[in-house]
Figure (spheres, one colour):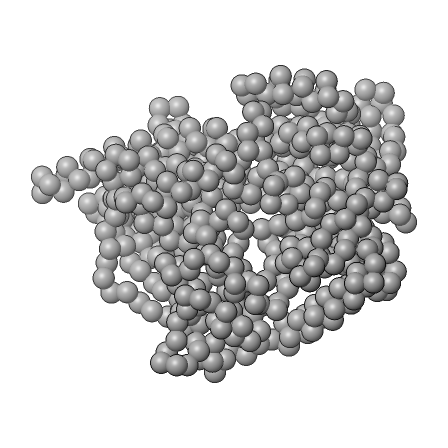
Length: 439
Length: 94
């Protein structure tokens, strides 16, 4: 472990470099603030960068995210640290903060890596690719994905056989196995919490068979199958590589379900499932797509028209809660559900099932702060102390919340939320700077 | 980056031991890769055909074939007559 004794100073610390954190960092830097943006992942862009398209416009998600990510990387006011976490945040009497920043070793000198992928080619290892949600393999020396930022290799030391092939193949000699954990203490005037969300783990509903039945996949796995950087050559069943022609979606998997501890609506599942259904109609023109739902919540601008568009394309919407999924010998799946419109318990066969998994708050946010309490709401999202007048304000003065860290929301709302957080944070920084000058 | 002429991986080797399961996984992948490429060298095949040839579950065959497609060893050929399964073939440089 290396400890850096020089304390660096920033105006703002932004925790989480997804679309909300990235937007907040850009807004803060654009008005002259010095920003430190940290993310625990190897790349910035969060989950949005992994999506296929966005609803309801069907714009390419990567085409929206990539320019923003590139602007973050090039902005002179933003220092971005990946594989990095902030902790032990202390608020001092003057309202400023001190935080401990911990960077895990990447075993690659990012500045020297050209992204040539020769290390990847040389690496003999094959492990599940977490960025493709386990559908395909990746090397132990790897670039997370083609539009990753930084587009630099990393070594997965847990799965590395230490054969040295990557180091021999690297033309710029940027692979460095001597890297260790680095710790920095920084000072800042404001903190923006943009820690995003995690996806519901569908193994918590065993009756849906996820993990046991290969053709039951999550919506994020389908999202990857529909993206240009997809794991397979087209949309295929994971059990045998067959092109599916009868796909079912089970909405509200891990949302509005008290039995698994997630009583609230995830806000995005109805629309992302409708989006995927439309994209599947394009990718597999002969396929039948059926969505099993409780209520369709098409509440945003253009959402209802988007829902109507899917129906007019031939997507079938069945009002009914799926009780159980069973698997046939050929890998097809039987869905047992109550059809609300007829009141009958019905069984239908599909060759692939997508579970529209809900979103959950990331855990451990409160532990980041030591001498002040960051309060959570009853659903474990960061509590907004004054949601109407100051929507980004938290229970700690100077700490603001952006995006899904505060509540489930879609991408446009996350960007709006980041706008509010950066604006309030900039005001606080100005106020603190003025106070310091007066002293 | 080297410390003198010494490759840094040698320094890592002195303090970090590679777990046995990682070594076993590598052996299994190398063996499977050879078997898939050997089968595809004979003729193009679908995932169920490869599964029968290799005596390996179809989901595993798909996972490894798609990984080899990603690494540039395998290419996609036509879909079968029933429009169900794609044929995969060895890539020229594979």
